[in-house]
Length: 274
Image (tube, rainbow, N blue to C red; front, side, top):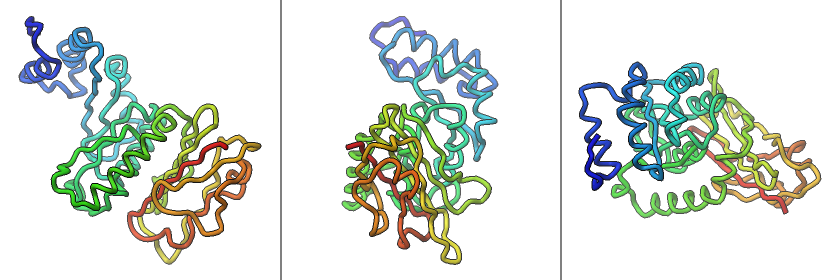
């Protein structure tokens, strides 16, 4: 390690990473921890640290959990990069599996370019951002290439994310519809521990034969309290009340209406206890 106290955490990390070893490879846990993260952790205790574990495809918790557990990485870092594949649809499957072992707050989730390099898939910025909002939202693309519309979308959704980030990061997670096994739909719900707020994410891979999106029977709410519905992205069916009891949302459900269909569509909603 450099002894000069003038080195920043970034300069030290850059110097260490020129070692002729794969510092981020799961087969080198001792080198990774001892030569890189541990010294940086002690010298820069206030600096946020990220564990990077590259995976080429949609490995689920069965792969990630042993890797992170064997390396003890989350004792040393604040969050983990679960895959280099940042395709927003593929990420839904990765994030689903990862959530069985770890909380969303440790899962780095970046918004990157479209078409995506992995699958050459084109998706809207809103779809990409909502996929990443299920974890620790980040922007990993060249925003100089964004036009005014994308800038406005990003600004609006980042502001909305900040209002629900604690609920996503530390609340309970309900997997309403799994994205696995070729499902055309997926949905998650995060509920704050005190049941004062819930966040719902809904995604469509592709609508076929006109099948409507399922009505989402929410979970974990206070059945006797009233909750106000706020759209983050998209809109609910016309007959959806602006305020209803937790029991109503859990039994009647959140209906996204007949217009929520197509390929790679996404919607999100916030419910706040009155």
